[in-house]
Length: 189
Image (cartoon, rainbow, N blue to C red):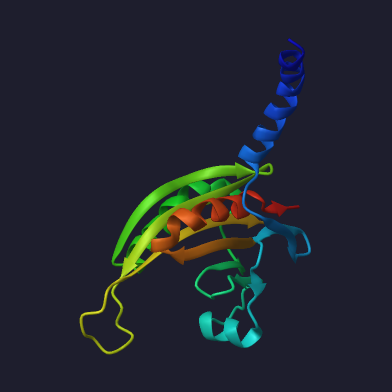
């Protein structure tokens, strides 16, 4: 009887430990991206050097931050650009950016498309798997490139912030919970 009473005394502690383990998500490191912007960056990810950013993002506006996995196949980026849209335009933004994604890739399978509140701020969220033909090496019968992507958009004043997580589609099961946890960690003040 004594061991049974000990078991029942430890049961709440055991339940608490199991509950904490169940909610323990992927390891993220709180990182300051800009003055009033922080987010969790997956453990092991490192900032992409300037020459790597220039090669991967050959645009006039440099991203605020770009992080990459140790093998360089998974990325997390944050960009900022001026916009005429306001936070009241999120429903329209959802339609515009969904159409833009569909035009950008040969095939798109949307997993999620909505307006989601994170840390008291609304975001337009698009989560999808894209497929595009690989034409880099001059034709041939190359397999198409498939990517898992989670993209969030937010407007602050006259600026549009875009948060993008991408990984090979073959590794979606591994990276999807990490991407979702990173996006849920965004704090804009």
